Amino acid sequence: MSSATPTPTRVRRLPVVGALRLGRPSDVWFKPALSVVAAVAPPSLLLVALGRLDLAAYTMAGSLCALYAHHRPYAARAKVLAWVVLGMLGGLAVALVTASLTRNAVVLVTVGALLAAMQKAVCDATRVGPPAHVILTFVSSATLFVPQTLGQVPGHLALAAAAGAWAWLVGMAPAPLRPHGPERRATAQALNTAAAYAETARGGEESAGARSAAYAAVHAAWQTLLAARNRPSTTRRALERLVVRAEVALAAPADTDPARLRAWADAVRGSGRVPRTGDPRRDEGSLGERDELVGVAAERAVAPRPLWSRLGPLAPLAVRTALGCALAGYVSLALGADRPYWALVTAASLYQANLTLTWSRAVQRVVGNLVGVLLFAAVTPVARLGPLALVLCILACNFGAEALIGRNYWLGSVCVTPLALLVTELPGYQPTGELVTDRVVDTLVGALVGFAAALAVTDRRAGRRVERALTAVDRARERAARLAAGPASTPAALEAARRGLAAAVVDLRATADAAAGEWWQRALPQERVVLAEQAAHRTLAATVRRQGLLPDPGTTSTQTHTEDTSP
Figure 1 (cartoon, one colour):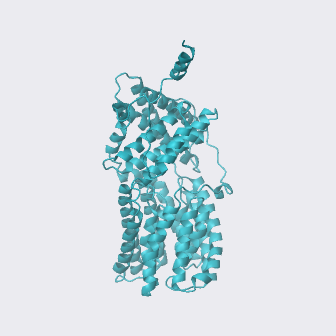
Figure 2 (tube, one colour; figure 1 turned 90 degrees about the horizontal axis):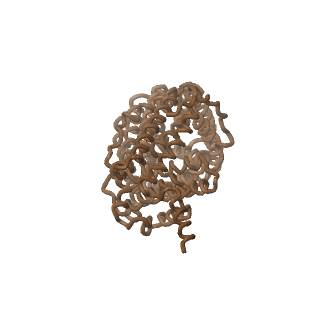
Figure 3 (tube, rainbow, N blue to C red; figure 1 turned 30 degrees about the vertical axis):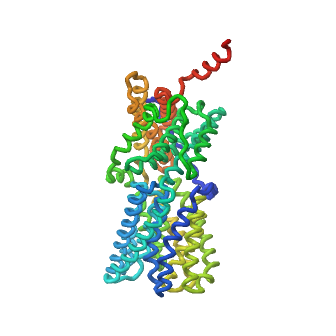
């Protein structure tokens, strides 16, 4: 372990303009956008035909579950979607029963804040992915303020469950057509980012950002491939070999052909046969080719960490969420708001991995909501032409939100805001000016109070997590170096050591970035982090060469020289 002294962490400026900068849309932005429309439309249109559009809020709670798990393999997606539906029903049940037992607004806000904190912690611990806890919190918080009786609760839950089952079917619908679609997309992303990093490294302009992005993409590809713990198919094994090639490119970029990686990525994105790696030093299907996947099989057999052990580090974030949501709701009530859950949900949507990201989300939320209320005012005349027009406007907002949110959160919020306002009109039309005013006030209250709570509740464990991540990298590096130097090391041990070290490096970078964005903490060992990463990358390169996945340094040039000078 390096003895470099820690350097003080400089206070970062909280970004404003940078938080609003648009990024590239997701390659599959249309999948969640179309899925949510397909999930929301049939139940809502059926209720229009029955003249019971007032019940659409409950069916929409289940339909919105179609937004989840689009990046997961279908075997894993089936389980995740089922748990999302059950989690949504659990939060909805608590909200409906509470609403039927009391109309005390303070109690309702308190229950909503506690639910939001629990939903945030569980979604982060299970890495359920976007939209994470926000949709669940919106559903449970909104229904807390809808008058209920205990006798109505079973029927409303049944509507949500039926819509949730339909959302599950919508999410699983592409499986027969492209059974390995998510794995293919993740593999292609890993190959492309590895190619981009290899290009910068070969050009003498190696970028730490490109390297971190490439390692993160490769790690994400492995997580996607390992998410399905059933027996791997021929296609999945071929994809795993390609991710191994991307991983090798990161360890030895100078020996990598970026064009070849990009060609593989383009081929993988299609629906044809997965390309073979074509390593000329071994026959396809030989023992050497299979050795690459020994570590993969071993990792697939390892059970995931128990949920309780992943919840512990999230305690500060859960406290922030509970405190911020409760205070936002209380302030909204003090200002005379009829819908304090808007302020509560705004606060819940802010909390990210650190304070800097939380500030960026606050800026994005406020800007998006302010533009969104203007859009709501513009579409209101159309939405009030009749129940069918209202449903069509809701569907358009659903599609727009998912199509745009990948470019920046504020852009998606421009459609989310009118969507939330239109949902309040399902039981009956309300004064537009009042809705707009309440939404603006609650947005500002939720953002200001929520961010203040983030300032008050600091994550003092961030520095300790960096120390633990450094220790994990050092141990993984020492193990990999020892095995790479040992003549009797088995292929399985080498592969497992290399994969373990790569994962530890990704975790170190994520932990260091999250800790650097916190407000109040001890100085971070930034120099040690950089030195540990550099040493780990050198060890990864040595391990790759020891495995025989690349020629030894100088082999290629020596062979070329011999061939050029021979008679």
